[in-house]
Structures are given as C-alpha cells and as structure tokens.
Length: 229
Image (cartoon, rainbow, N blue to C red; front, side, top):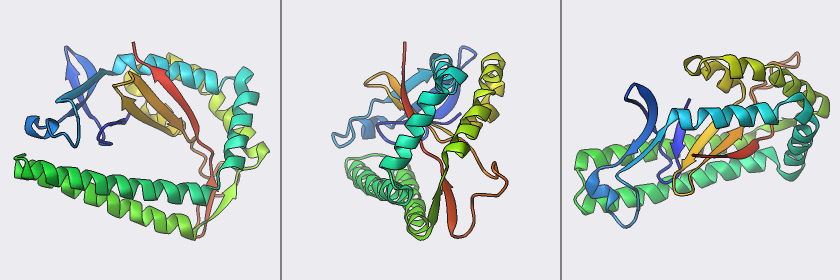
C-alpha cells in the first residue's frame, strides 16, 4: 500500500522496525532545517496504526446498509465536478506544486545540502511535472462518460461483497483488495490524520472497456479521514 507525505508530497518508504512494518519519510538534516520546507528530519508511522482504521472506513462506506448514502455521495460528486475540468485542475495543481518544490530544492542546494541528493530531488520533481503535463493534455482531449446510477449501484454492491474478505485477510495479503477500492492515502502527521480517497476500479465492468483513445469513464472519488492513535 502506498502512502504519501503531506508535507513534501513524496511517497513514503516502507521499512521494518522491531519486526513490524512502518512508513518513513526521511530528509537530509541540512535540508530539513531550510525554512522554505519546515520538514521534520523523519516522519514515521506504524502500518498497524493505519490499517484497522482504513478497513473500518471501507467496511462502513461500502456496507450494504450504507449503500444509499454512498450512492448519493457519488452522484453528488458527479454533479458537482466536471471530470475533465477536475482532472485538468489536478494536473495543473501538481505542476505548480512541482515548481514550488524545485524552487525549494534549489534553495536547499545553495544552503549547503548534498548536491547529489538535491539533484535527485530536483530530477524527481521535474519527472513528476512532465507526467502531470501529459495528464493535462490527456484530460483536455478526452470525452468523459459519466457513470449512470445503475452502474454506480452495481459497482458499490460488488465492492461491498469484498468487505468481509478484507476484514478476514492478513495484512500482508490485502494489497490486491485495496487496489480494487482505488485507494490513495496521504499522511498529515501535524494533524495526525490519514486522508483517504477511493476511486474504485471499474475497467470493463459493464460489458465494455471504459477506456479508449477518446473516451474515459469517470468514477467519482469518495473521501474520508482516518484518525491516528
């Protein structure tokens, strides 16, 4: 399962401590002191502090008794957001964020950060910006096909049947199930919350593949927050 640090927007590294899996975002000491970033030397969280709350959120959101509320939330998301506009805006935000990081990384380089490390950060940000630029081009070219009420209901019902499996499966075997829920997790350690977004997988779920050169079936995003102990 991937987890992103809310401060620097980098994917956190998986590591083991005392035989248990953790997520860690570590910065060079000189760079972390740079006023432009305000990043702790290490952001650290246990996986076992996240997974139980994540499983509860999934079970509640996609439970049969919650189906109506979930369906309404997804319909409201579709009505409130134009998929093309939303995707394009997200790509533009990513590009702007990459530009901001590049400025910070260059400032850190001037401040004395290891040139090799700073160059690695700059190259990563430039690569992410290039990817976002391609996403922007794609978003403005596609003709999104909004899911119907019946399609959303079918999708949520199918995912609802997976919640029992999720709760009964060992942590090390849950990745395929999490991927089916289209999860994106961001750790905000200052607020001690994990921001979760779910855009459930649906490729070829309705008798035709939703992705072509010019069409893309839009799946609304469900959002929530997981409180850390």
